[in-house]
Image 1 (cartoon, rainbow, N blue to C red):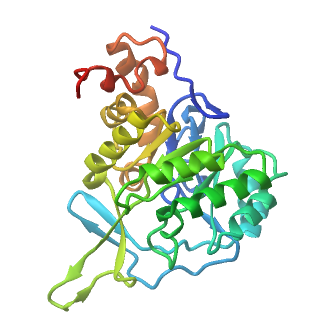
Image 2: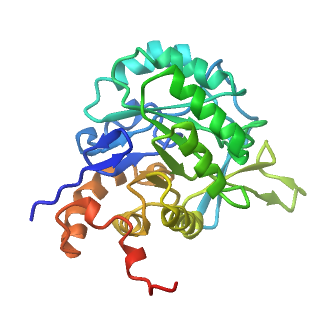
Length: 309
């Protein structure tokens, strides 16, 4: 059975819904021996900032029950280095490139978008409005007005489709999603990591050098699934889901909950071929539901509910 895996995120069309998540895939060179890039719907390389960043003091990662805490702190060599060193390789890869940028101020987002505006090979931009491991990093996506302003300014600075990556560390995410939509975002990425920490009780101090970090991996999947379900019911913007996705069953749960695409994140660290393998299994999963197109299953869990739910 032939199944059409194409999916749309506003102005961005992908050949299938499987992407890799920023911060877990390096700049793709590191994964070339493990991943068939022709299989991926797209890839999101590591976040870049306006200026080089050394990141947070070590230790920067610690394993937790069914999860991973990280406090890398956006360690990177800056956007100029990205443009001249990483982008020439990334643009040769046979899949959609979604550049990920983060600013330490509102002004830096449109400035970086403008620097990328005329660069070939970029399919879209993902705005990291929500990193919990840098000062002020989570603040952008906790305030609807700020989120809207940043998206608006990036939209004015470049013609790329825009994905706004939001934080789960808010009381109600819907106002933030609406603000991103009002600013002109094509889709939202749900979500960045949950703020958490680990303590060495014998030493009586936090394990991470930054004290707190972002929790990812299977431990957060049920919470992210709930957020995707919640936002999908509001029907505001297309959704890219990320959080604890490690196999085709996870992918299908998010699709029927209402996501148009997913990103594979923490699984890349212990199973670097996961994304390619999942793409290969998608057709069988969709055929099981007798779906001829990916869009035939997106959000269908909502249609199974009683009318008064």
